[in-house]
Amino acid sequence: MGFQSIYYLLRAPKGTPRSRQTFLILYTLVLAVLIAIGFGANMLFGQYMWIERGPNTPGGAIAYFAENTAWWVNTFGSSAGVTANFVGDSYLASLLRSPQYSLRLI
Image (cartoon, rainbow, N blue to C red):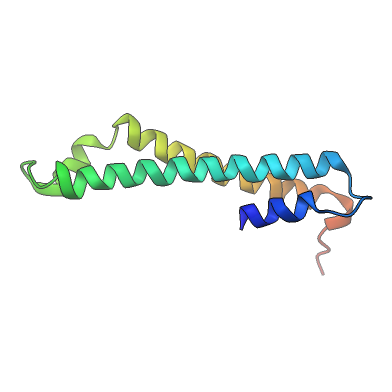
């Protein structure tokens, strides 16, 4: 969906402001990178916990999880996910402040 959005932004009509297109393309790419980092880190941590190291740890996968929650890969992946959420919410909040997208409460 991100690549399709970029495709349509690049093919926007002539009157569309170029700065807005550039911002939205960079915004889409930043979100894609952050989500990929979070997904990859969680996959690696899950692989270690359930397949490679968890079964050999005394107490099993749950004990491995408890011992390695602060591992830098897990922390980095969680931070990327939280940052992606913050970036997405910030953009939505900025839309609420603009006059053309204002919400009218009844």
